[in-house]
View (cartoon, rainbow over the protein chains, first blue to last red):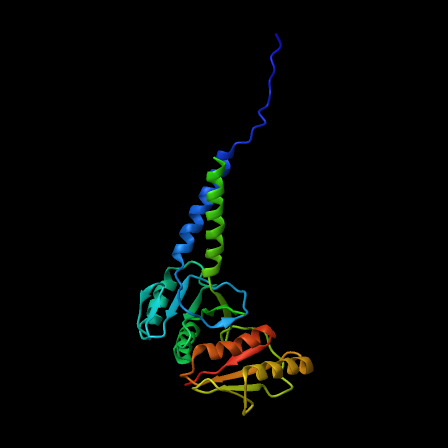
Length: 130
Length: 118
């Protein structure tokens, strides 16, 4: 009797399903974490806004820092407090997410805070609609 | 099993696309006092853009549209190479009017110098 050792040539689908399922959960979670439902100023910039220090401003004058409401006067101390906990202070950057119509002076105030703290600043924009 | 994979794959592609759409882009601002490079004294006076409270643009003192400013910037880049734009916004102007100028500067790879409205 001859014993034949055949290698199975069948493809197992379940491992592929596992990987795709994992990726699916990852993208579902990350997409729900980012909540920006405001109309932003348009630009052609391709730089992705850093998401470590986010200052959001809406047209009705409300301001939030990393998702929590904040007043203009306490923003600097809040940013400074957050900065103290960060490990990569050299590359820290404030992302200014301002709805269209927000007066420039408010954005200027945040830029001045970034300058005082010695960190960078970005203005968040959305791609130009054609 | 393959039908399940199909559905999950479809959902995966959907969430991949939507997650890349919600992340906003950004214009980088350079802060004063950070750069250590010594810049040469410019040969020409900087081009000045004033933005009024209502969002009207004034290029070197005369009223201009956004398209007109872009045309002027394009011509100046062709003539002189790199130059600087000095942007003087009114403190109550809507931010998208200022960002539009910063976007022109970004596209033509030139410096836009912001002035403090105060």
